[in-house]
Amino acid sequence: MAAAFRRIFFAAIIGGLVAGILLSGIQAFRVLPLVWQAEKYEAMAPSRQGAVQSNRESPLAAAEWQPADGLGRFFHTVLFNILSGIGFALVLAAALAMRGNPDWREGLLWGAGGFVAFSLAPALNIPPVLPGMMPGDVATRQLLWAVTGIATASGLGLVVFFRRPAIKGAGAILIAAPLVFGEALVDFSQAGPVPAELAASFVSATLAASLLFWLAMGGCSGYVFSRLSASHGSSRNQ
Image 1 (cartoon, helix red, strand yellow):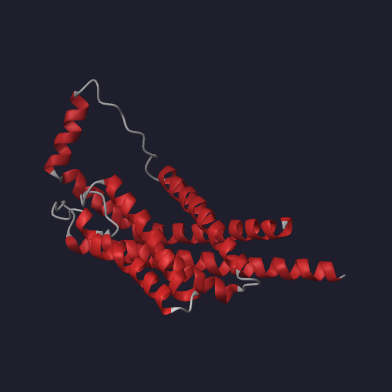
Image 2: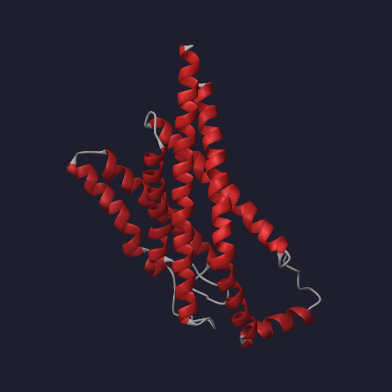
């Protein structure tokens, strides 16, 4: 049992590290430039300028901490991506371990499932937004993302791993329910200063980066787990 936990842990560390670094590199070249463009539009918006001036004039306005621009900001992005990758990879590696002796191919399939559950499905309700866009309350968006991800992951599990039609139907309902009812919880009527073309480019770039993130995480975790399992088996046979 201890050996299995070690394999899960090391597979998650390697998978999350590789996926986090890959995601950070893609974001640096494809995603962050779009964020910086959106921040320029946000800074030029009259409401934003008024809020900034009001904060400067108010002696009670608390300064909100943010990482410094440049390398400091990118360092925090890389750190967050790696920690997120390791966290997701721990769950993914544990699921792979329960399937027996997986390889990188099965890891890719599980990674694709994670992308569908935690990136693609939530984006159908609450697409990634740039600074200056104001679709709904942040807490509501986060709650809807979590509910959609959990429901989709659970539904995919019921559809894939069970044979009874009734159970598969329940899984399909779980997948569809957040997509049917979730959009009503977020108000997209408030249009920000960011052009629609820039917002669309951000959504596509974010989803593409997320897909590669999940595939790298799943493939690396499956590969490392299978190699460690093979080494453990050979050492026991000697």
